[in-house]
Structure formats: C-alpha cells, structure tokens
Amino acid sequence: MPKYLWQTSYTAEGFKGLLKEGAVNRVAYMRDLFEKYGGKLEAMYWAFGDSDLYTMGEVPDNAAAAACSMAVSSSGAGHTTTVVLLTPEEIDAAAKLEVGFRAPGA
Image 1 (tube, rainbow, N blue to C red):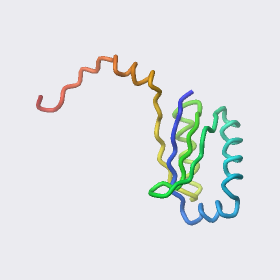
Image 2: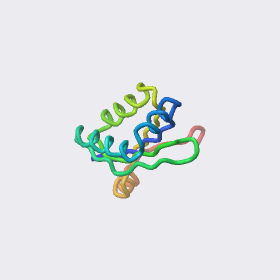
Image 3: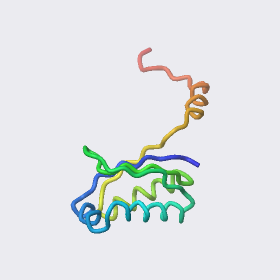
C-alpha cells in the first residue's frame, strides 16, 4: 500500500481544537479514521517551524491521499501538503527505467 507524509500547518481554529481535544486523543481519532478507510496511521509528530504536524501513514491510493488533504484544508483547521513516499525498491526500479530525456538545448 502506498505511503504518504502529510505536512500540516494549523490555523488558529486548528490550534484551538488541538488545545481542547489534546494530542493523544487526536492520534487515537486519526488511527481509527485511517483504519476505517483501509489504511494505517504510522506516526504523528508535532513540530516547530513551517509545519506544525507531520502525519505518516498508508492509504489505498492517490485518490484517498488527496481526499485526506482536501478534508483537512476544507475544514479550516489547517493547510496540508501531501508527499508521496517511495521505498528503496521503488527507487531502484525507477533507476532502471529508460526515460530518454534530453535537456533543453543539449
């Protein structure tokens, strides 16, 4: 199953909700949500910087990953960037593909 990393920046409303609900409860909720849709929550970490939350997990496909991002962004609680994660085996397979690319002017 494909793995994804969601980088989320909370809005003021998102922070208010986190303060009310608590981080541990939020992880439990997200774990149940991932499982409900056939996925698996692997990790959630809060951080300093441009992103407030990093969530890593598996969902069935890109459509499911996009749906997760859209749900967060449309809720008004945060803005999310989705990163597709590749395994070492996928990178090795990609390295063996003949692309035939030519740089402009080359």
